Amino acid sequence: MIKKTLMENKDKPSSSKKTVGVIIFVAVVLIGLPFSVLSAYFLAFRERVYPKTFLCQTLISGKTKEELETTLLSLSAEKSPGEITLIYGNESFSLDPGIVKYLLQATSEKTLKIGREKLFALNLRQLLWLLRDGQDLTFDFQLDNQKLDSEIASISANLYIPAINPEIKVVKTPQGTTIAVETGKNGQEVDVRSLKLQLSQTLSCPQKKITFNVPVSIISPKISQEMAQQTKNRASSLLNKEVKLTLPDQSWTISDEEIISFLSFDGGYNQAKIENYVKELAKIVNLPPENATFRFELGNNRVVVFKPSKEGITLKEAELTDVIEKKLDQLEGSGENQEIKLPVIEIPPKISTEDVNSLGIKELVSQGSSFFRGSISERIHNIQLASLKLNGILLAPGETFSFNQSLGDVSQDTGFEQAYIIKEGRTILGDGGGVCQVSTTLFRAAVNAGLPIVERHAHAYRVHYYEDDLGPGFDATVFSPTADLKFTNNTPAYLLIQTNIDLKKKKLTFELYGTKDNREIEISKARVWDRQPPPPDLYQDDPTLPAGTIKQVDWKAWGSKAAFDYKVTKDGETLFEKTFTSAYKPWQAVYLRGTGN
Image (cartoon, rainbow, N blue to C red; front, top):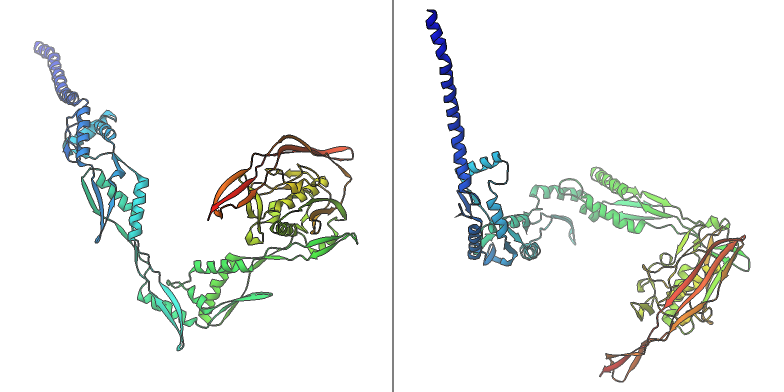
């Protein structure tokens, strides 16, 4: 018995070894065989397109890169679009086939990357799907979007039908006043997004002839007959009603026609129309504040009011829009006319009439002058007008004066006439010729007052008007917005700008009144160097002038450089010093020579 047991125990290790061997064999078969198959599969299709792969329904499985590129080239050459036609009803439109360019290399690279660009597990999954279902690829391509958009815009313009919005009208006839409601009419427009999407899908596989319908969207503002009748009933109840808008010294009325136009077909009010009405009203109501203007009387040695100040007002547009809507509700509910006191903000002027004795304007601080002898009448007119616009301006302590900003728009719309100006290297007729005489004269007054000059520009060439007294270099040209004259009032009080024109002597003078502070001003004489003679006269043929006629349109001037020194001191301390340098180009005379009949 004991011997048998020992024999049984002796056989057990041999049996276990056999079991383990079977398991290992089965594992090798189960794992190794598929691995061998996959390895063989990958090796067979190395650098080739995997099975069951199509391109626009053409089988390309097993092709190498070179074979694939040959196939792509053949397909694109054979099937590239020869015509692209869009249809809408009985109309047809053509698109230029040149808008599309097929990208063969990109298509080839995309195809060969299938099953090769991700993790092994994901690649394996993709290949199993490919073996089961297959895959039909499309071409990569590029569109000339600028050209395509232009051609689609042309098609859109042909097919566009504007919608006619519903409208309510007050109709007045000899028989009486009635309400008419038009329900509106649908319109249409090309659905550009859908059109481009459909075109892209169609072009993804080349076809010699492409035809498809233009997708069109309906624009539908039309209202129902029920909504039209409800609005008509509301409008009828508002006939002969009004809303009055008031200010202390004036008033406006919103008539029944305007009130009815505010009605919305959804039962409320068209807020956009009310806002637009308020915006237009604001253009009439809004008034900027007007500063008081003053004049210094030398005889009495005091400042007097030349023009009293005036408060400005600004309409509260958002608040008024809300109030009008509420009043319209009350008007429909009660049937009684309504009144609205306009909500406004009062804006006080910076300088009021009462400030006349608190501005510190006690005496003449400085003056500057220039001559305009020989000016044509239009130039003299502009000098007078510009001087008048600047007369009476007050400059607060620390404030910087801008000539362009103070003068405003210079054009025929603001009263200026055409006279000679320098523009783009030529002397030509332009609006406001002569304004630079005014800026030059004011520049001289500012320098004589010892004020800091923030911005100043010399003319392109020497102008004789500005050299009759001081010589070259004491001029200041302006041309908005590129060239301005700016200076700062660094005196202890306000400065009053006052102008004086002597038409008999052809002399313009600017006077600055304020309070002197014992500053001393040193201004050197002009230094002139690097003189250059003008170029030879230029003659240009002009067929608009009769033959034999000569007309001068530009005048010669010597070129040079000029400078003067400017130093301001106070109580022995230098406040600032500066050298103003000017570089004037030599200027040629230009003549027009008539060649016409």
